[in-house]
Length: 304
Image 1 (cartoon, rainbow, N blue to C red):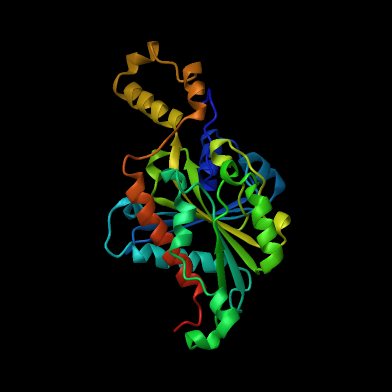
Image 2: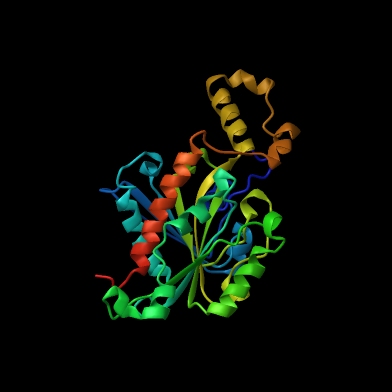
């Protein structure tokens, strides 16, 4: 399917697409391991050179991808084992994790669009502490060591008239957090990763980039503090589904190649269409809770 460009927010997929073209890529280090008990495959992609970053279309930094097939399945415990794994990976990316800090969690997305409501719903379930600590001190939680956690849901430009970066920059300047954690829905190029993959990166995020709607970036360079981005792909390019169906048809009916052209302009016309699952409302609600619990576990140090 080389006749059109499929967008993706996942660094793992960007690396795979380069490998598919048999292009040698130096400056990218990959580490993989599998948590058998939890059925979670973790892949860490470290982009260390500018040339590699240019080829992949991803900034220099670390990208952790957690592939957890169970994430799409209903679970009364909201997949606590995935939350625990997320907390461990997130802790490794937080600078100076062993000291007390102030965190601002930003829930990106449009609450009224189900597939884009992941960020706002994650914020709904966070354990917020900044206002209590500022008013009553850490004694209110019966502990001596505790991180300050605050959150914001900046909404979308169509409703606020402001760039997300403008809102977040203003909040950062006023509240002075040590670290910003951004949560957003992502786009994937593979249906097998839809709603079952979590990406964590210390490079920040450019809201809307996965669906071609580029907004100003939220990074350490733009905000002045480290920015960690967490996301789950909730949509996939419509051309992916069509292309996958064509490839399956070609596998079973080789003669069909006479009538099908994977470089057809009709696939390119699908570039502005994105698909999601029919149960996306239930999936986003469940996944948002799993993510929020992972963030809570990583940041609630000193509570016990």
